[in-house]
Length: 485
Ligand code: ADP
Image 1 (cartoon, rainbow, N blue to C red):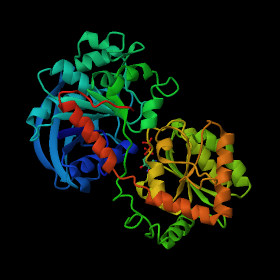
Image 2: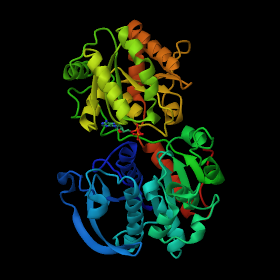
Image 3: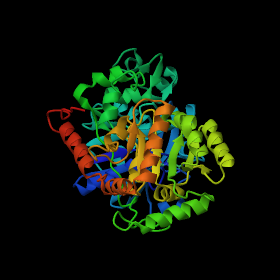
Image 4: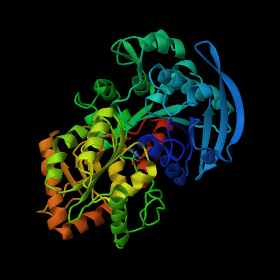
């Protein structure tokens, strides 16, 4: 199957979260199954220059957005068996970061989707499927169906996080896209969302198949508690909406070979893990004699359950029961909280505010327990990476966290981590103390948990096959393969 994979992020070129990991590894996994999946993404000014060495300029064209002609350059690079097409435009992709904020986000998205569809016939590649990811690329299905009806292409929309929908003024989107008026009429079959234009909703309505990144999150998003007001629209897609669990680039996150951690290790040779732990404590000037090193690597936003951490972590720290390392950036109030905590507990808490991919791997490898008590979690890759690096996960039972972590049960002996369900600081604290007691009192159990985490198969193989089936179902006569979510 020939597939063009449209994404605003892909490792190693650009990453702000899990989408970057997925777009950087799923296409290669699909290609290993015999498909030809190529990535179409922005050529951001902030992509480190060396990564684009060898990129070949293909052509430039002008693309009309709301009556204005805009430059669009296309270059191509083959890396790791995947062909990347980079879309260049100084105005939209020449900023200090990846995403444009406010209205700039709408302009960036419309430009990207229009340029992809306009320039597609000139690429040296004829896809059968356009695979869109998140709201930034979600206009493609509506534009394709309504403005290029002669093209026999199918579309897939993958929702990596339903909370981010790209909601803008209706007149603005109508003007920028030139989509017909009925695309904005109130109802479940349009982009209209409470009087505004919702780009993600347009993708959900117009894509031939829609999926999210774990079966549990797919089910949860059909309920008002998790549906972000789109639960009815998602439900209206019936069997065309499903959940496919993300995999991990196991080559990139392999403690046996990673060059980003101070010492290598495996589930059978754990001396390197102890060295990584010591190095992490030294790096942050911390002590953790006889207590676990707990880590958080996260965007510091409400989604991640950080108010629960704030609500109980000091009780645990005051007892001297654990040491904490936090790496993250986001909401200034959480940044201030963790910074302040590090100042008040200088030997017990280390905080690094910012985005730092190499430090992230050192934190995973150097910690014993990884904390991720999310309010909701489409899939979550951080807990998978933590497990690969031998840090036992402690999660809230939601979305992909439920699909990847099973709480340790001392009666049956089953489980690969710790979890709790109610969204409450008291429940997190209880579970944290439970995990700590296993770390301090039952090293045999702890060793078993680490081994289970490290051996668990998080490779893309099974999930890439499911995407392959999804593609095949769209191009065969019968429409999307029926899903049971
Ligand atoms: P989300 O996509 O919601 O941010 P995921 O768990 O799916 O959450 O993916 C997060 C990815 O971003 C992981 O690869 C994680 O290691 C990485 N990450 C998050 N915060 C940081 C940070 N401050 N520095 C480096 N990497 C980070």
